[in-house]
Each structure stands twice: as structure tokens, then as C-alpha cells.
Length: 401
Image (cartoon, rainbow, N blue to C red):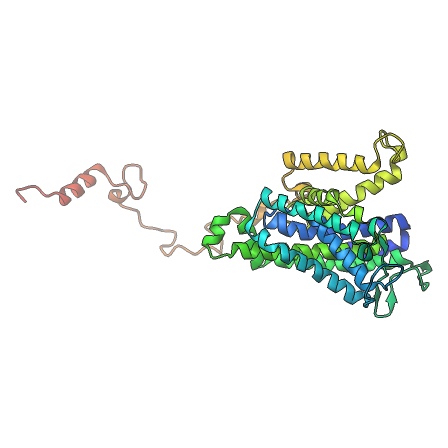
């Protein structure tokens, strides 16, 4: 409880002390963590490989923009309230996953990965060509979230404790609340009966079917749930970017999400969050401090760009995790955590004078055990040889008897 309270206090105090770069990087990490939790439910907990997670982020982001924006300059929009638009965007991502769920319920492994890979190419074609909805190659601006009259934008001006709160500071608390709710819900799913069924399907599919688990139904349901997590991450990502660009939602983004759950730790909510923070923050750190690092240059200068260097580094991290750390960053943290020493004083040795030990009813002057019961060595339960012979004779009497 003390650790969690300290983490919450630090998360609340961050917008008061950090600059805009770190706040925006944190928002990207939060949105990535939400999407990684959803993919970890599908791949880490159920064992279903998905290469099309970026498609559902695009569905969530663009549905939110189209539903909340006003028609302007050849771009369509419905002008709905932004909270309603966000909820409908998440549901739209779930519907898109539901349309694909019959395939997800019957395929597994590499076959499902190849099938979901088709969603990426389909999504890219639609995003680049459906100009009235997506804005084409240039994308379109994202309307700010407005919740109960409070606008998550730079205006109107807001000052809290002499700190001006702009769009990034306001979105920080919104992203933090969304991430906490998404993590708590996912942990509840994994800790309950659905989580046990998902783990059984991942480890022993035939045994799960024999025990009465509807394997195809669970696979389809988890795929829909993972799609909704992707849509929610897309909405949060659009609010943080403040502009949607079709090129961003490509194959590389899906590979990034697979790297997140592998590096962080498969099948764990905390591992998904840790992997998302690592993968999403690394390119931005290399971009900011690339001048001080060897072999890293600005894009277009002829050297290795920060994005390429980041992919090389977390590609090496994936290999290292697979070979040496099967539990990912979460498993490494468990190994490094100090364990309390076992106390030998907990083992209680009772003596004859110990009041907790029941008293001998025979008292201190116990009667001697006969030699026939003790045997030659004086140990009870081993009779003498003559006694064994007489016992055998009594079992097999002679003909004279």
C-alpha cells in the first residue's frame, strides 16, 4: 500500500514539475500501455498471435475524429459530444473485431497472425483513400475532449498552484485515469474464471475442450475485447497527437506492440505496462539526446536515425528476453526484489518439560518394556528369533497338532 500510494502521489505531481516533452512522451506511453494490455489478453493470456492490432487503433482514432468533428472543408463529421464519440469509437473497434472474430475463433498461431496481417493492408488502403472521413495522406485535426464543461485544450486558460495547465497537463490526468481503469479491469478478467479458461486454452487446448470450456467462443470473445482496448488506445493516442496521420497506423506499429508484450512479460498486466513504457519512450529519448550518443544522427543526415536505433535496441531486447529472461522485465524485477530471510526461531523445539507438550500418562517411572517386545537391540517392534519361530509355528501347525 505504501508503494502504491507513493506511485499515485508521483503520478499526480508530474504535471507540476515536468516540461511539455516529458508530458507528451508520458501520454504516448499511457496510450501504448492501454493497447498493450489488450494485446496481452489475446496473445499472452490466450496464446493467439495477432499482427493487426494497429488496425483497431486506427478504427478508434478515426471514428472518434469523424464522430466528434464538425463538417468542414470537404471533411465529414457528425459533431457529436466528445465523450459519446469516444464511447462509440471504442464500440466501433469492438464491432470491427466482432466481424473478424469468427476467423479468430477457428484459427490459431501463425495462421491467425497471417490472417490479421491482412487487416493492416486493408486499413492502410481505406485510410489513404477515404478522404472525406480520414483526410487522406495529410490526416485531419482532432477535436479536443470536453467532459462536463471542462475542455482538455490550451484554452480557456487554467492555472493551478501557479502552474499553467495546458492541453498536455489536462490530458495527463485523463490518460492516467483511463490507464488505471483499463489495468484494473484486465486484472479482474485474468484473476477470475475467464482468465483461468484463457490460460487453459493457451497451455492445453484439448484439455480445455474436454473440461467443457468453449474454446472457439472464448477466442472470439477475447479478440473482441482486445479490439476494444485497441480502439481505446487509439482515442487516447489521437488526443495526445492532436492530429491523425494514416501512415502511423501501419505494420511497424503492430510489431511495436508485439515487442511491448514480449519485453514486458507475456500474460501480465504490469508486464504489458512496463514493456509499453520501454518501447514507446526509447525512440523519443534517442531523438532528444541523439546528439550526445554515438552512431545516432538526425533523420536525413546519413546516419542511423533515432527511430531505427530504437528498433534495433528493442529488437535486441526481444532476443535477450527470449533467450535469457522468459518472464521479461517483470520477471527480472521479481528476481532483483529482495526476499525476506527465513527465521529459524519459528521452528519450535519442545522438551519433556515444555508445558505445551502433553504429559506422559505413565509418569517419570515408566514400566520397563519386556525383552520379547523390544528385541535384541532394545528397540520396540522387533521380536526375538525364538518369538518369530513360535509365531510362524502357530500359523503353520504340524500334522501331529
